[in-house]
Image 1 (cartoon, one colour):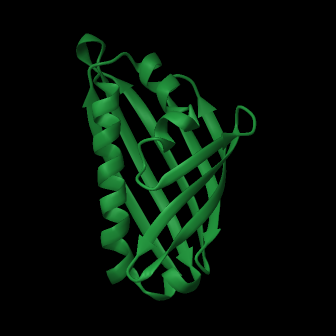
Image 2: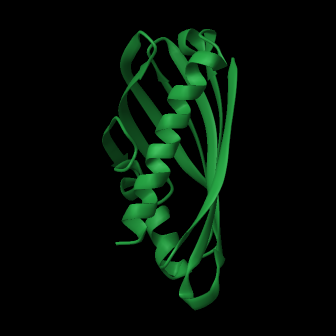
Image 3: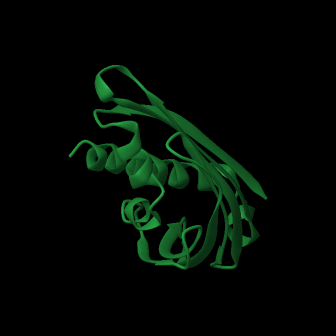
Length: 149
């Protein structure tokens, strides 16, 4: 089992309500994550994601079920989920907290915690971490761009 943790923050020139509403719509965020093929929203709190992924020589599809464990409009939200595929599993929690800043801007504080097991987990953090970091960095960069449009 490999544990991963990423966190960061960034500012966008949009009101907090706008940012919150964007972030709690699974299709908005999932469309920015590399490899995501589909998102199925089951109800306001539950959704499924299908993604193609490659870690080292292992490539394949991951199916993820996730739900909003907490929503505190317009301040924060937390998602928990589980993914499986490629002879591997992943349990995760991710969330954000929004702070109003001067002139209707918003500071987005985010985090991602995951536990990866099975074949990919057996590869260890040295193989998994660079791939996961790239996905997180790409997603955050696209998210900042999307929120500043």
